[in-house]
Length: 326
Image 1 (cartoon, rainbow, N blue to C red):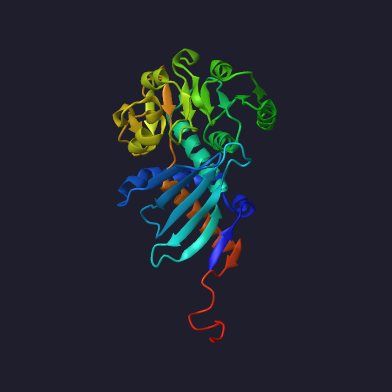
Image 2: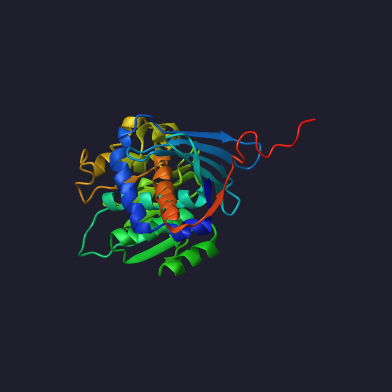
């Protein structure tokens, strides 16, 4: 039997704190996976792209995921698709999960973790969070970051002023009129947009500031200018992927331009931020194992609580239920 988990099911199953800890554990262990994950993307003869992430694997989980997404920037939601959770024993399709929900949660909460690890922590100083792009991923990042550290204020900007105003109101913040104004007022800046031109340059930022860029997950997208990346301590989730289609590719930089991966920092292989006056940037692309981490968490909880809809895709055993011949 296959368990179908919709957006509504997943919202009731996923706990932000449990997800953050699952992702933290995944970052420390994912490099031990024997088969590297792949991210495959293609243009379409429509106003969108198709993306597949295969296979989602983590040591200790006897299952894997295959994710298929449609990305249409003008749609709401802009991302739609499905995550297939398969048994590692026999390939049984254990669950079909709404990919928009899993993707928003794993992307946003992993970004919150990376932001927390790299941003300066000064207990005696108020911290203002700036948001550029007030969508679902920013929503989850703000939620996760608030559980990891104190955030004292929020400023938001979006191309859609009404969406920015709604976002700011939900989080007790206020709106500003441009991306540069967000950077001028915030200590931590989150960018989660569809931009194909730099939104911030080095002159828009200041020493000691942290920036997390979530929108650069396929060729052609850009949020930060090359001079920001070159001046900062730059961390990514995967160097080759960042150089192929992420922030390094957008700036024409090689894989070694990334000083560290988040996994290296969490494992203690890189010290991360050591100078409170240095700029830091976290710019992930998003990895298949992250889909598995949260899909497995949701599936196990759904099994325990009996949530979701069970269907039998295999139908009757061979020889049964077939129409008569002749």
